[in-house]
Amino acid sequence: MIRRAKIAVFISGSGTNMAALLYASRAADCAYEIVLVAANDPAAPGLSLAAAEGLATFALSHKGMTRADHDASMEQAVRESGAEYIALAGYMRILTPEFVTRWNGRMVNIHPSLLPLYPGLHTHERALAAGDSHAGCTVHLVTPVLDDGPLLGQTAVAVLPGDTPATLAARVLIAEHQLYPRCLAALVTPT
Image 1 (spheres, helix red, strand yellow):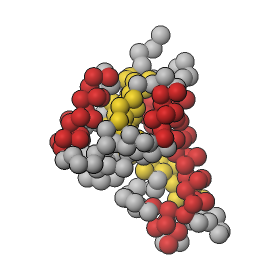
Image 2 (tube, one colour):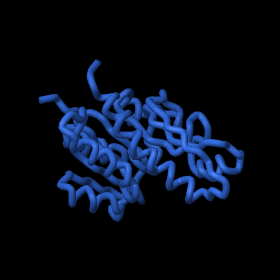
Image 3 (cartoon, helix red, strand yellow):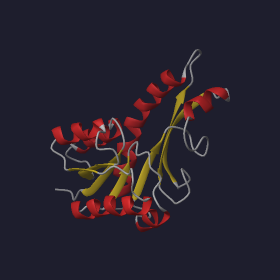
Image 4 (cartoon, helix red, strand yellow):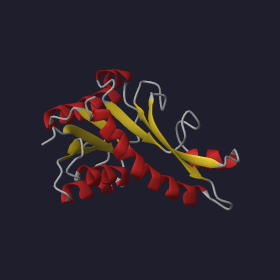
């Protein structure tokens, strides 16, 4: 039996990338297992899915807390879960440089653009406004600089005539769900 790396997944919303990671982890040969789903929004719909799937959850609103205090609480939950890696999956909070540094090489993110193009928000609108032939998604290691860590994988998605940010986002999300589990498994597999 293979040793499976323990993963904490941070979400802020619906948790579709968390679900993709979870369902991929159920393959017998998957190199990781999810041991915690944590959110900065106690009402995040992804928490209900995680709980229904039998995963441990942790939720703490960041409202009224300093960034450092909120990060400390999130990190305590991660450490108590035994997680060795953190996967950001639609987590809409910028983590403190100190937190990121402690998880250097062990924290990954999925971003809905072909980085280094369009870090930050509104990626689909920006790709369409630029007239790009392709958009896509990137999995990268997290560093203190937003969306700037080493790339672990990318998938290009064609921009179709008449695309809107919503139609493009829907196709990119399909690519995200395929790419993220593969990149996470590759990261945690010993060489």
